[in-house]
Length: 150
Image 1 (cartoon, rainbow, N blue to C red):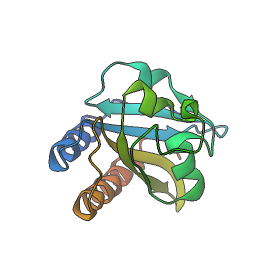
Image 2: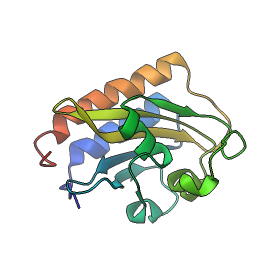
Image 3: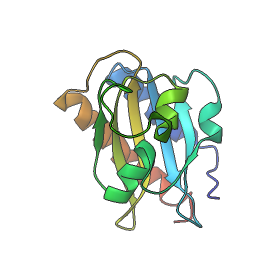
Image 4: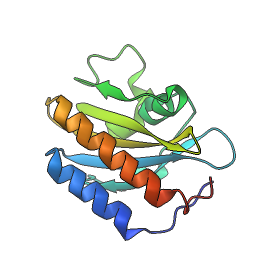
């Protein structure tokens, strides 16, 4: 399991992103150092601490899909617009997210993390919001690079 030291700058960036795009939730997931599983390490605007216990398989859920494809993902009107099982999206269920936008975080050119911004009401992320999430993701890549041992 990849452990991430408590990094105040990470929480600061997540809080800034939450304000910039006026979203309800921002979470950061990182793929485990050994094995394919992905775990949520940080969250702001969270309803509870369930995110800390959520682990998804590579290719499953929001984090697993973003890491496996290396591309961003928008989810709108969850759970009504998904063709997958809703239980494949534990972070959306735990945080009661309706809409979210997630971007991959790259370490040594390989997608190993995910930054997710989510809303509990149906409010899609416009182009400007998406750009803010991407920029925050790039900032986090720089901070985390030396701290997660990837």
